Length: 199
Image (cartoon, rainbow, N blue to C red; front, top):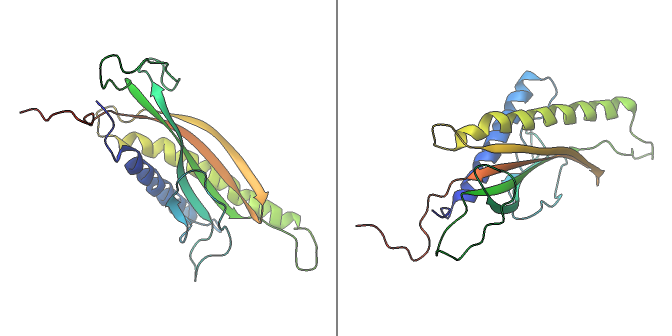
């Protein structure tokens, strides 16, 4: 069976919501930790632009930018997931691969300490506070995906996925943050274009 039209987008929205909830929960448990960015948390097409990581929109809302994007989609197999499969297509009409692998990228940006108006570099205390916030974000995003992704599939055994590399990004342009990759197995539940409905 082919993928349903919203298979990718629904999953990216679910991942975004899951990570956002986890960040807000962590902010309650860890003093001075910012929660989910209240103004810029979205699914984006392609690589995310570093649009903003500055102050919150208003009041006590959390600043920063959280995005989920798709890095690539490719064929895999049940036995070798998440390895890329070299399956010859077109021999028997619409024969999707046994597993379609989807690589997602979760990116979270926060403000980075920078030079003061007097041209002084950030203090060690400022750098330490930013490091603490980043390290807590790293654990929170990682744990959120581990705990949430299995429940995004309505199958008895849950969704299969492989955690990829998490790396720090920045500081650049006053932003610093993390990028977490995860490869998810998508089930084929849709009909191929042109297939007739069964009576």
